[in-house]
Image (cartoon, rainbow, N blue to C red):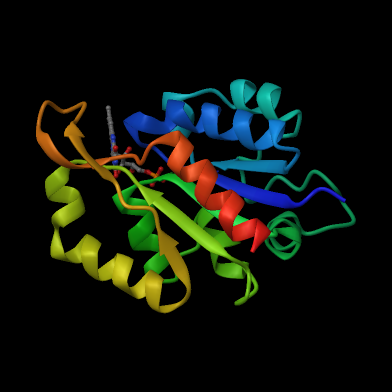
Length: 181
Ligand SMILES: Cc1cc2nc3c(=O)[nH]c(=O)nc-3n(C[C@H](O)[C@H](O)[C@H](O)COP(=O)(O)O)c2cc1C
């Protein structure tokens, strides 16, 4: 049976790279269940991710596509790996503080403690280096999250510094490593 990956996509300028991640993981024969935040849909369409994964893209915590199941619990329960790429400062803050006000943050909170959890932050350097963001990341690492570090690069905002989403290949290799060990 295919291993299931929940791919969370949040509202970063680098959200378009989630299409490549979803595509590569699908071609590696994983079942990729994408959850997008509302902001993410301003950067990339659910149709793109649905077409690449051949799966329904999940957007709304109150949409219950299967009346026999509670969608956010089912997504959390059946995940072999939870990956958020890109992860915004906002989402990291919500996840670190137990806020569950949309589908992605709700699924994050409902994961089994042993489920592998990986996040790849992407944001402006000051947002990334902000002690609040660093504290939130430290909190998430304490409860089992692995961080794929952002790269130093010329960012979309024009600043040069750490905050660019890790390379897609690095993210995919990391997933393969976690799921095959
Ligand atoms: C053009 C643009 C680019 C953005 N890029 C980022 C980003 O790379 N990282 C980030 O943390 N926030 C970024 N934001 C801000 C987030 O979209 C904003 O904080 C939003 O509330 C995040 O919502 P979400 O975490 O639910 O996806 C960007 C906003 C805009 C308008």
